[in-house]
Amino acid sequence: MLSRDSAESARGGLHVRAAAIALCVTIFAVPCALAGECADQTQSGLNACADEAFRKADAALNGAYKEIVRRLKDDPTTTRLLVQAQKAWLGWRDAECAFSSSPNAGGSIFQMVYSMCLETLTKKRVAKLGAYLKCGEGDLGCPVPAK
Image (tube, rainbow, N blue to C red; front, side):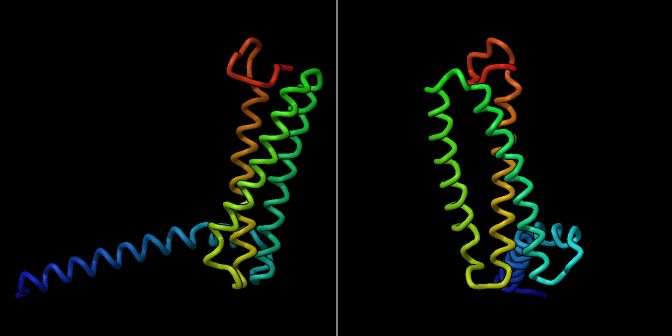
């Protein structure tokens, strides 16, 4: 029979193990998902796959941005605000990914983790810009005119 202190210690150990498992799942789930999509399973290959995924997201970002600029061609003030916002967002994205990837700095996995962060945040920005492109006529909360 376990003493009260031993039982509490055992429960504490279970909590630590559960937290460690949750951390491992969180840290490695995304890289594992990427691993299934890459033909080259070396770290170099995984880095290249992550970079390619980011480049695709970046191309979508550029497309959405260019379409907004096109729609704002007759509104230089709002265009200037868009340019400022996009430059600020790009700076934030790059800094955020550098920060969140920093535990891997100097390691072979760093480039993959950094590229995956860039891809994730870029896709979120694409969704936001895409929402601006879907605003209805007369939507007062939307800075981008309808087609």
